[in-house]
Length: 176
Ligand SMILES: [Mg+2]
Image 1 (cartoon, rainbow, N blue to C red):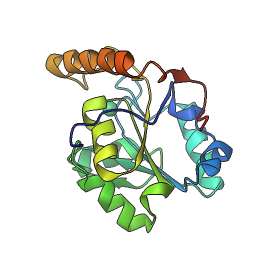
Image 2 (image 1 turned 30 degrees about the vertical axis):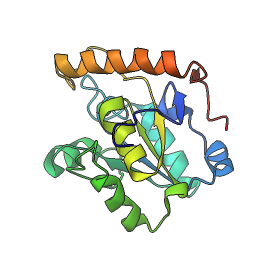
Image 3 (image 1 turned 135 degrees about the horizontal axis):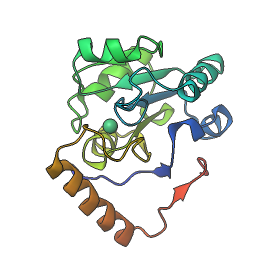
């Protein structure tokens, strides 16, 4: 369905994803949103925790690829210190960016996850692509990432999601 914003999993932070848990799910690469998922406006080059996590994933043979609606210029500045490849102008909630990443990685839908902090862009894009989706909490609540309308919509959809899928809870890790 075009507007399916239901995540497969809800994990508070991207750094809680471990190579072992991902492998158990057959996941071979992580596609991730940039703003408020990997970096926050008050720390635009990424925290040590994020950098360490990315290195651990890469060392485990699980590439991390940024799939962002931002321009290439903006993303390359942000990811310079993170050293990850990226897809710019991904046009989330459309599946275009995720499909491009999939072709570049030569992986199938089952071997990918899309991680992000927004239902209306990241989760819908993942579901439109047939890739499993991981919702994380926004790194910063008062970020400039969002218009007021977006924030209002996110809250509304989140409440609806909790009502319709009470089984969906914030977890410490991917648990199948
Ligand atoms: Mg975001």
